[in-house]
Amino acid sequence: MKSDAPNQIGPYLLLELIATGSQAEVWLARHETLGILRAVKILGPNNSDPEKIILEAQQIARLQSDAIVPVFDASIESERPWFAMSYLEGG
Image 1 (cartoon, rainbow, N blue to C red):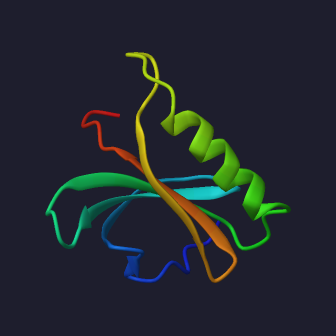
Image 2 (tube, helix red, strand yellow):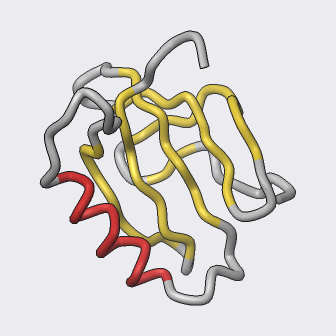
């Protein structure tokens, strides 16, 4: 996916592109008010069902397990769904 992400999405300032694939990009981002680093996954504009992505993010956010990266925020901007997760250094 070619990056055409803005420099901010929701309350998150996008700092550095840390991963990219055919359907999404993952950015290191900082919450502007809280100053907390998060990984923000932004799906491409051609995603077939942005509402489904948000529903999946809501379901993941309800789960608690050491094997699941917590989801803290999700929304759709300019028809692109995104969600914010814990940023785990080291890949």
